[in-house]
Image (tube, rainbow, N blue to C red; front, side, top):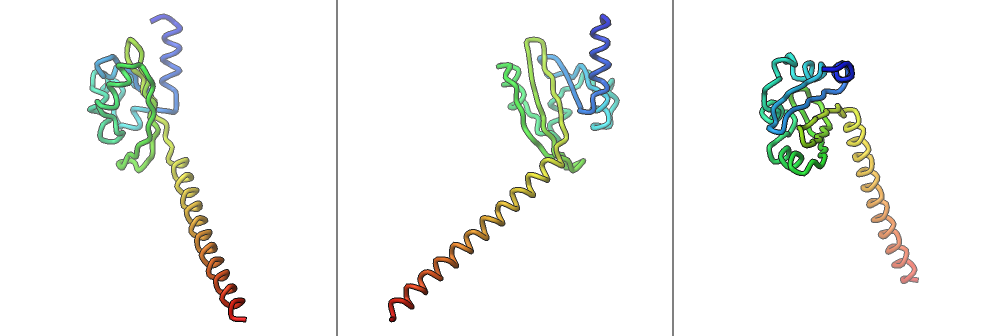
Length: 149
């Protein structure tokens, strides 16, 4: 490895987000320190393992999701829930002619905020529907009263 490659590897190893990289067969060739903390495995133990077998259970990574990215070299992104750690993750998978890179970003706080916002919107919609119904009833009563006169 030249000095630029060593520098890049050191930079990737210190990233706070888990990052994995591998060959076109789906074999893990690199995992940074954040992957080690997330999966509770030494990064050297992950090298040579199948990314699909290692991440399918907790991160919704399947051959059906992985293979099209490799074939078309079109990036894919999805969110998934890891019940083991009770966290939401966003996964970004990219590929080129030589292999793939998978970056994971923990989005639990963002997801909870989104759920809270959606709950608030739903409550506002329910209030609007009740208000609309009461307005219609009030209008009908007003017409009935005016019609009796």
